Image 1 (cartoon, rainbow, N blue to C red):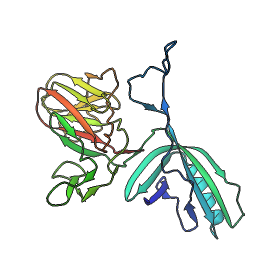
Image 2 (cartoon, rainbow, N blue to C red):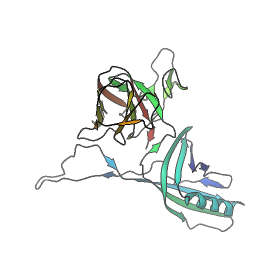
Image 3 (cartoon, rainbow, N blue to C red):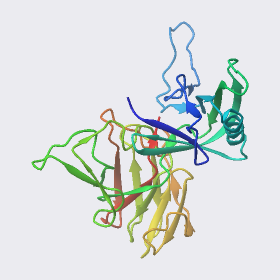
Length: 293
């Protein structure tokens, strides 16, 4: 069983007299937004051929309060849930995941003995759908694209282990693994990657092989990096190698009919992105936050 700890706005729900209880859902339910097309006289519906689009999800957390801290802990839970802005986070076997949230309800379960014990059900909406990593990671890829990190599965090398840099190779801390727990590095779509293109590039076609979604950019050559934001469909230029939040705005962003670039996990848990560049054969860097269901 995974060890899971929940926090709201950085404050642990678990304390000496308050515990997250059985009935909390580790996997929040998911539902897709669909436009159903039917043909008269034909059974079923016509497949859209488009990647799924998801409604916001709802997370249920049950907590139990007991002991001499009954009033204090009940008040603390209510205060956290009614905060002006909510960030819910969980740590799953040492991996921190978080999401912006909105309170749907906080209800007593009807078993209260005042001053002694009670249980409550918290329902939080997750407008952004997925759990995300608090900090982004950077992956260096060749000009033709490639895997964002090794797929899940046991190490396949003579040393019996492998390492993965958390940022740029040889310039960031690394994780050491003898195997890859499934979904450790991500398990859900990544909709908002920022891609750094090399200086001199005049066009780029970036595609997710799993879904066919993509983002394109075309413009004049410059001795600057070009950054393409797949989530906001914007682009900018900068001489800085880490201008992930913006620079000198440039135009030329487009995307294919199937939709803007969203990186979907493969069945083995890995991610790929193919790339075609003109004007440069330099490396590209993908800047993204990990994503989990």
